[in-house]
Length: 283
Image (cartoon, rainbow, N blue to C red):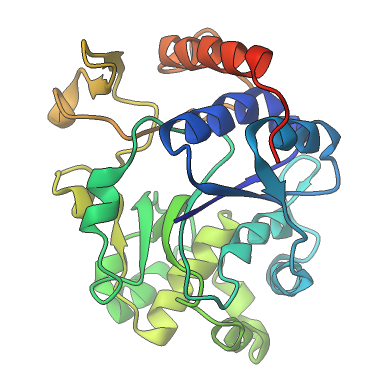
């Protein structure tokens, strides 16, 4: 299993915590970092400390993103096309991978998730079902008709699958008709993957379905978590109360004291401080 994340120095506050958590929970995994942009000096230094590799992004995915979103910004100063960098996980190789956002921590060894994954059942599995903001209001009902299983679309905070699950030929479908871009709203790579599922007839799954729990989103910072006597993290509220939590994603671009599960972050931050203080650079 290869672990991927997509990061830059703007997210270093999160990356130093989430990369160390990934290394500690999956010590034998190969970790690859996709540069979100060219601002990666601190990220490269961190990669050396945790034994991760910063890879060269394939310009193909930038090209697809620019074709669909042009100069539109997802947030002020952040072009939407940059989010297509995540799709470097689809490198044409039949290797299994898990992608996690720079602000999403892995909290366990993920054995339960890995054991449940069956490529023949769902070649790609997403972290959650997304909120209805991926497509223009007039386009969403048609796309749901083509693929009812996608609901409002797939969230791409976490993605599990195989590197050859989708191909560049699949993606080139969007280059043949410029009208595709008229369907897409705010969420860049999420809209792309959700629309692609309709085109190629892929009925993909989400993490909660693999784990057999009834929840739309098992990675978000809500509900709260606590550390059990066994060192694992458990949900403490809602329908997931008492169940093991394998992930946690913080939604703010920078942490605030009112951020959900800030206490969990502080625990992981202390662990990262200890790890990075004691660990020499890895090769």
